[in-house]
Length: 258
Image 1 (cartoon, one colour):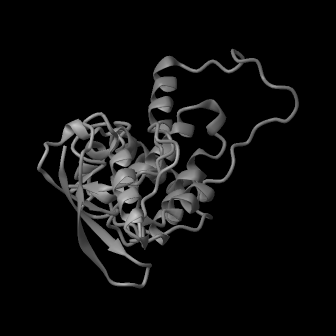
Image 2 (cartoon, rainbow, N blue to C red):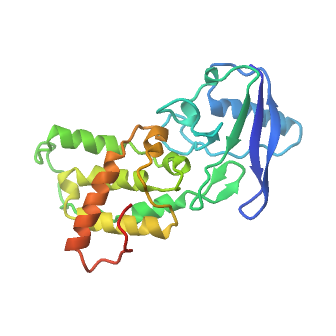
Image 3 (cartoon, one colour):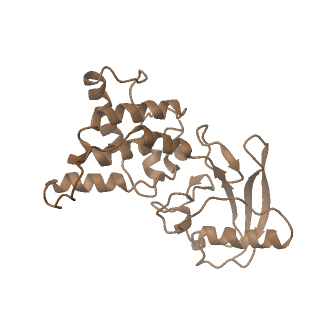
């Protein structure tokens, strides 16, 4: 396969950026998208040019690092697929592919296709810890969990924090990410002591990070590589509203979780 790439290049957070055009030659259809970028970077390095900076780590669809807008779609054209799991057979030889970083004010560009997603870390940190008793490990069957709750918790916990939901949302909202982190603990007995306080604090931190408000547009769940449903947002909003009524002493912004 031979492809033309239009790649966003930006030297740093405060530097102006622009698209640069590159040719990707003799690309195997069985390569992943990141392997294709590796080939392009090897060619650039051999020419003495600066390679394209992009985030990656596990390359197994787990770490959430490989966030790219590919032809205007978060992670590319395949549903429920991370960029590292996207194969070049999803494209046609001779095609032009446009590659951009996540576009959101809360995700400033560090360089080229790399963005700063530490705002997600601060939202998680705002949620605090889960209260558990110290001592020996509790028997696995000591806390019975209904299967629907266990399944819902596992579905929400599948979030890898890649940021595709934010990049795809026309409002730049982080509600799906935050709701997944709130919900996966809120479904379980171990997460009940701080359940409502956690919703208040994480939503407040989300607002502080300048993410946009959620209008349930739904593009977030379409772009999510783990198929997390916007039902989690409804659950987070419900917890937030209950917390607002029963936790009046907590610091929070007015206006709710949406």
